[in-house]
Picture (cartoon, rainbow, N blue to C red):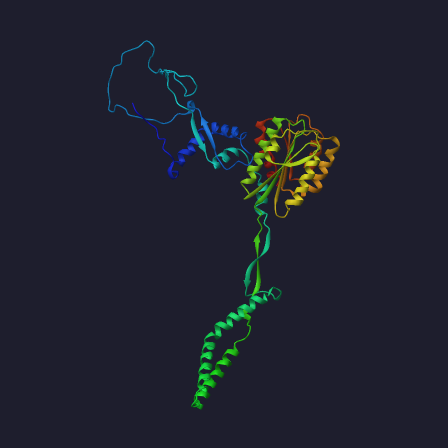
Length: 422
């Protein structure tokens, strides 16, 4: 008995509907595969999709079978094991895995499915509501700058371009008098030749040539040296500034109390924030700042995996954030975001400095500042100080994360709160 299964490729998206049905059917397995893929990806690695393995036991595909056709009446011999309605168990076989040979059984390998980049991000952001307030702000931030745009025939005297205007006047005079000048040169040559004749020139011919030459010189002289049509003014137009650029500052506490598990939670949160920015901006810079008693700007590898540790002075990271903004990211040109992850353990005398830095020098420059406190079983001084800041600044939000399963809900809640308040 033959079985027909359509496993053809998807030329020109002719099977797009079937693909969407497949994604809907195996959403649970695909969502889990996407979630597992986060740990093995770089924070900036969003240009590729993901390979998803679906166990063979979860697959059930429609089959076409060749039946006998027509109507038949047949009597089958009885048996001792089955009665009408019983299901015959499938023969035991291998699963297509393992490293030992066998002389019996059959099975199928797991089905490998390739997610596109857009599909991967769709599952990655599933159940996340991006902040309406932030999206509105991103869409409405429009700034322009004046740039040269050639020359215009209209303008004000201060914008008059003298050299360009003289060139236009010279070109006009040449265009209007070129034919007359050619004829004038020809007539002057004829007159000179006529006067040079040995037998003496014909007075009437000389007089006619002189009259024509005088007439041509009057016409050429009547052309104005410069005319209002020749004036050219510097033209400047207003063009939008490249506001589709953003920078995300990732601040993480790497003191002795931040173990690898806490850093992993922080990385997942930073990935969500980075993907949000990369889908809304043409250019997104990421600045990594790690700190214990001192702060340091580092690359991604050192940010997450460096073994350096020490005490905790959170204000050192905030000071570096402020200085980098002043040096490299003008507020009028960049959309500024910051995300800070810490377990809240800070030098007691430093928490007040953090609140002052945020309110006086940092938050007025930022679109949004998100603070997540990891393993927040007993809120300490930093959390208490940040609570005061959150009451006065709508672009500051804070939440606690204890388990990986809380990252997505916390991210959604952070941005949803701002949308509701806006």
